[in-house]
Image 1 (cartoon, rainbow, N blue to C red):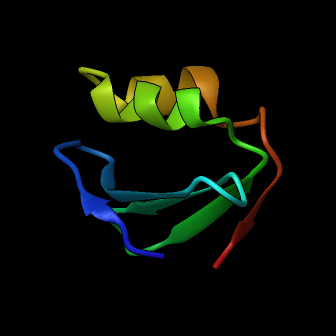
Image 2: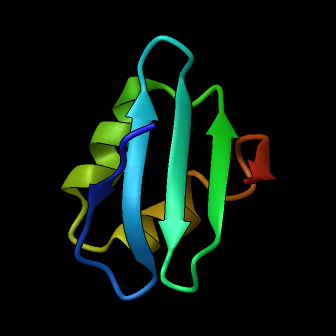
Image 3: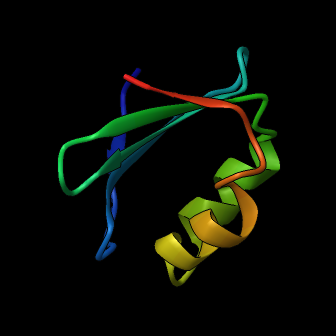
Length: 69
């Protein structure tokens, strides 16, 4: 999946696949996590958020099943 670099103190890049509703988040430490069942609106929300980290913690973390890639 292609990820887009983002400006964030915690997150390095974010990718999304509309068909599978998979959200990939790469953190600055190099870890990449894949979140499943994420609606398009959540991807749009994090990409447009002033603070990607705050949006992630409030809306994605602990809400969707994930696996470390």
